[in-house]
Length: 478
View 1: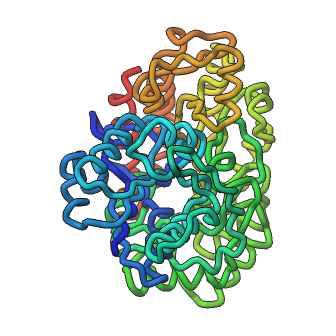
View 2: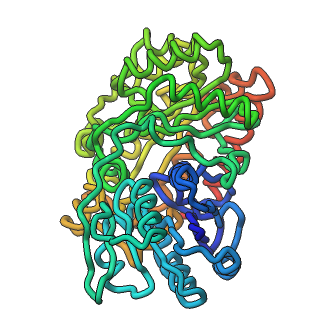
View 3: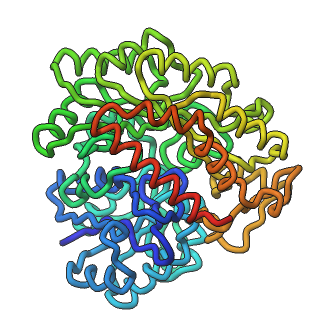
């Protein structure tokens, strides 16, 4: 009995990036994130001696017809599809074609399947299950129940159909002991196929050291739909065991920690840095962090253990925008974090978002001006995306700021899809292109980036970043 866990096709212009993405979207270049949670689910099934196959149809560039043909060849008992809001119409077409061509069981998971679980099962006869929230253990229990022909009533976290009625089982508690999860499957999902523009290594591995974020940012999708607000951590020993495996078995020369924030718990950071230093593992690593929980002592220890870059969520150059989005940081903390990070010899990058409900032309100009003066090593600009499940979505709906013609409008290519209280869609159109052009044509930023080139790895990283920026400028026409 076989089981398929898949990132299904996302047909259309460019490349749809969905799995392990906090903001599912299309982009012009094929830069995909390693689908680590699908890889975890596949590894868990294999650890239970189940015949599991992991497939990333987007990485393989399969269209829907090819994907379904491959499913037919495998002939699994059930197909698990990770879906998203902007790709939902394609996802449903794929699920329906699988059912029509094979009559296999079909299960959906991801934020959209969590938020709309009842409607998806109720309105689509070809969908057998929706898996809510954190999905790995639910997939495991469902596969074991199917294999053993056991009742479904006790499986936590599933919504399904029984005798034409939608059954919503109790929710599953979050996974408390992250050390008990086997390391992600990197055989079905080849890590070399997921090298992102900000990676400096020839072969970078994406790793997760914690789950859940205790903060309440209004625009953040995962805490409210997948991994919760309770911060849970792997032990330092478990983390470094995985790094040793990646170095020795896969030839990895760089690690990227894709936690919501690697810097939440100072003890967690200290334990990890001490563990990797005690084993004398010399490998550069990158992470994401928050500007309000870094300090000079911790940053120096991180640098000593190999940290070369931290990516922060700056979000805005307007304190009013930061406060309204419940970011719980200040402009001074942003500036201080960048200075401290760079003083420790670590690259400081980050992101800004335009189009939150209090945005005005004044705050737009403030953000671009702040970004230029900040002195970060690089920045990204995005448009606010009100995904179902976020507080931003509920606020935009309640204030009639949501301007969606279809869910596909959330794919990042349609321009602004919410209005602020002060700017309509036309006024916000083109803001991302203008911000990128203004920032990256600034002589100060050009010189700053050229100064970072000291070896072949840093040159490769700058070139990757330049191509990524150009792709965004020319791809996101609106």
